[in-house]
Length: 106
Image (tube, rainbow, N blue to C red):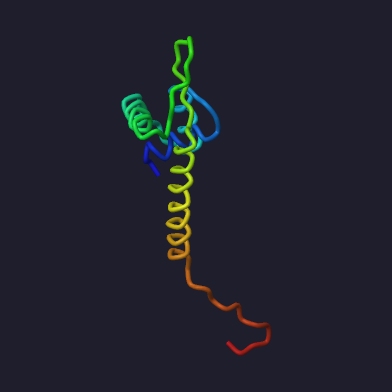
């Protein structure tokens, strides 16, 4: 899944992070690298929706946190994704085949 919203919220669900830490974390858990434009564009949209908030700081790097509304949205996204994954996996597995009983005629 390469949806920046899902990836950024999933990263921040673990704890507060600045942009570079989010990029590293996303790459670590998903294998996908978000470029700076994609990352900060996603953060801006997430802030506008109230799902992510800036943390006041005097440091050079701006940390962000997931809000309660963002956590609820992430839960909803993951629940829906879980249903899709479960359905997809069940549909690609071969149908159940009975194991022949010992001594049964073939």
